[in-house]
Structures are given as C-alpha cells and as structure tokens.
Length: 630
Image (cartoon, rainbow, N blue to C red):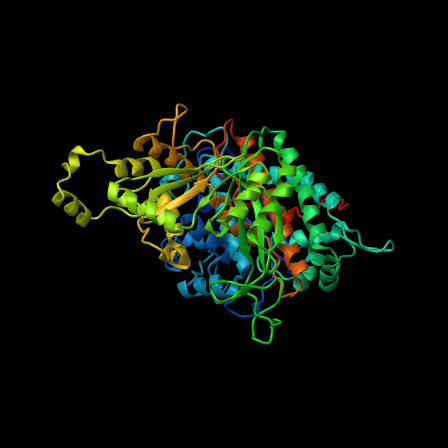
C-alpha cells in the first residue's frame, strides 16, 4: 500500500514570531490505487497561520490553502499561466473539490459537495497580487519537492522524463536532503572559523555577545537587497538571541575596524578553510590564481572636489562608464581547484597596479606556498607588475598592449602569412619573457583572391594552420574573432579594450592579439636550440590560451560575491570594504560546501558546482546561527 509522509517548513520573514510556516503531506492508499502528483497535492496540508489580508467575511471568500494547492499544481505541471489551470479544473471538477474549491451556497439543498470552480482571473489575481514573492517561491519549492517525492515512490509525474523507472543510488530528493544536511554541518564547522578569527573593538562591559555581530551580518548578507537598518529588525525576529544589535550600532562597531584588521581576519579564516579543504586532497600541488579589480554599486552621494571640479575622494574612483565607484582588488584561486578568495584590498586613488599586485601576492604566497601562475587582464600589463610577480616567485600570463615593436612584428607576420609566433625576450637572472602572437580575425575571401593573384600555391595544398588553430582552441568554424565559442568571447573581450589603447595608433597591428608570459612551458626553441615550427607553436600557444580562459573564474566569483553583500548607502570606505570582505567569506564557505557535497555524492567529482549559489543561500538562511548560539 501507499503510505507517504512529507513535511517541511518555509521562511516567511516578518510574518510570525519565528518566521516559519509548516507544509505537510500524508497520503494513504491501496497498492492497487493509481495516484498521481495531482492527488498528492490535494492532500497537501497548509499552515493555517499564513497571513491572509483578504476580508474573510466576503461571500466570495475562499481560504488561502486551495489557492496555494492550485498554484503548486500549476508549477508541478509546468504550465506557464493560469488559463491552463482554470481549464483543467473545468475538465476535472472533482479535483477542484479535492483542493478545497467547494460551494457553500446556503440555498443549495443537495447533500453532494458542489465545486466552486476558480476563474482564470481570480487565479491570476491571487498569484500576482495576493501572494508575495516569498509565498510564490514556496509554491515553486513545494511543487519541486512533491514531484521528486512522486518519482522516488514510482508515482507518475507530469513529464515523460518523470515517469517511473529504475531508482538510482542517489535520487534527486535524497541529494537535496544531503545538500541541506552537509550545508548545515559545514556551516557549523566553519562558523567558529569566523567567530574565532573575527573580532571587534568593544569595551569589557559589552553585554551582547560578539558572535551576534557576525550572525547578523551573515543573516543580512544572504538576503537580497537587505540594508543594515531593516536587516537588524529582521534578524531580531528570526534570532534565538534575547538581545541583538540595532542597525546603527552594527555599522558603528564595524567602522571601528581598520582595513588591515579586516583583511587579516579574512585571511585567517580563509587559511582555516584551506586546511579543511586539504583534508580531502584539495588545494595541493601547483595552483593558479587570478588578480582583478571589481566595483560596488555606483556612488551617487556628494563627493569632495578640488577647485577645478575634479573628485578628490581617496576611495571613490571614476570609471570609464562615467560613474564613480568604490573599487576592490582581490586575488582568487582559479582553475581546477576550489576557487577561494585569498585576499583583497580597497583600491585607493593614486595606487599603482604593481603596488596592488605586490600587496596581494605578499599575503597570498604566505597562505598557499605553491602558487605557480597568476593571470591578469590587460589592465595589469606593465613591467613593474611583472617584476613584482617575479620577485614573489610566481609566473604571470596576461594580454599585452601593442606598441610599435609588436605592431612591426604583426605586419611582418602578415607579409609572411604566419598564423602564430613566439618572440622571446632574454633577461639576466630571470625567466625569459615571451610574447605570444595569435590571430584575432579570420581571413576574408578578398585575402584569398589577393594571394592567388600573387601566384601562391593552391589553397588546398597549403597547410591550413588557421583551421588547425580553431580546432586546438575550440573555436567555431567561422569564429576566430566572433563570439560563438568561449575563446571567441575571450578574444572579443581583449579586442574590446583596443579603442582604449592609444598606443596601438603607432602602426597597424590589427588582426592579432598578443599575450605575454614568463612561464617555462612556452619557448620559441627546443632544448637543442632549434626553433619550433609553426605547428608546434600553435599547439603550445593553444594550451596557454586555454589556461587563460580560467581567469574568468574571478569574474564569475565577483558576480556571486555581490549576491552576498549587504546593501548600504554609507560613505565610509571601511564599512563598504567590510561588506565586500565578509561576502568573500560567505563565498568561500559556499565553495567549500559545494566541494564536500560533491565528495559525498561522487567518487571522482568534476569542478563544476553541484550546489549552486541560490541553493546555498536558501539553506544558509536557515542555519546562519547555531543552537545554542555561542
């Protein structure tokens, strides 16, 4: 027989003392029954305490539970709108009765329960106006959970892909449960990393435990668009603590920290995360890193200016888009390793790129002593930056600005019909620096006609090195300078900087991009001193450019980190930097959670996320604190 039980609670902050409401299911049926997901939803129990602002005395009032069941059905069936839902109830009025849409007309003398079919307009109104964002999210989540429950129990679900079949060792629903349990376990392990390494400068008579600060900031960070003032009130409602901080006190205590103290606290926490990851064999061997700069939301407040109207704020910097921002530089592990943010600093007016790189590498090389390569974009292309990398014992790789020498080389390559070239710059007591020239545009039919007129060999008889390079780099057939492939987008990103590089005006230099590295893997000559032929150089350059594609890991990291940041209009650079720094902590914890979940589910996991950021945020909202809290 069927005896299914399901129970869950969901967060509707600000609606109850604990902010949580219960949904449950108990379905009992004979083995000969043929239940469907629709039947399960009909037995769904909805917490009666969910707030309902509608007038209950109105003659057309229908309780909230039937509307919730109806929209859970819509989500489970994958219907895009309310028309299909209303039509389905018309075709199956018994389902409307099971969901709670019944007539209570006192003039009706029949003992038979009559359906009160919901109109499409009322279904639309409830979904778009009666439900808030949280309740709509809950409907989607419940629908997903019930579909997975049906699959697990061999009950037909809406789509062919959900039809009963052999059950694998790990179902989607059990995986979701594992993710939840592992997230809670890892957060319990890593929260002490934060509370033991982060500190505030408070008096000895402070009455609110310091852990409340970090819990409150984590609580606000994992909620979308939450400011400190409103977040403090919400945290008080959700927290098990008797006393919590006001928003103004929270900001004031954080502003008392210096930037260096914030950085040091983050590094100590991250070192403990690294130690935890290495227990599972991660972050061992040579590591790749990336350095880049990101910005916060546009700054729209008043700024100090000089007599000429130029902004002189030390931490509010102009950008080429015309806006002003607080900006932060960071170094992050990229490639086939857990992508932790190792260190960060606020960008200050007048701070040179080599200062940024030196400062970040100073600490990153202490945290992990096996950094092999650091990748940067063209913004960091300068000899002092590369000197700093070499002084710290790491190799570098970045796109290079094109000056006269590079443009002359490109023009010579065009005349010689070369596809790639490696040019070494010998240096005493340091690795040679190598310029890697590769095409950024495809040949045109006009190019082919010109070559044939000049008496070139038949194109079919010449080695097609450009086509070979497309294959090596994973480019589309017609895309060396387009965006149909990852590398095409990479080259497009590099070319997008070209109009800003005024140095390119000295000579032509079009049609090629230049990278520079000092990595020993790249060489223009073999061990005997003989030059590599073009095909060997193509293979070598293709591999290095594939390395550079991993630099995008830091860009993707910034996008996720910003979802963990507390919103603020504060002008204090320390408070804004702390928001970024603490978001990096939450990001690092998420990546560790993802790693441990994958190791729990797979013998040989790949490096794509198994726990996405949305899952982590949803689960972390429930476990930002521990019980007991300290």
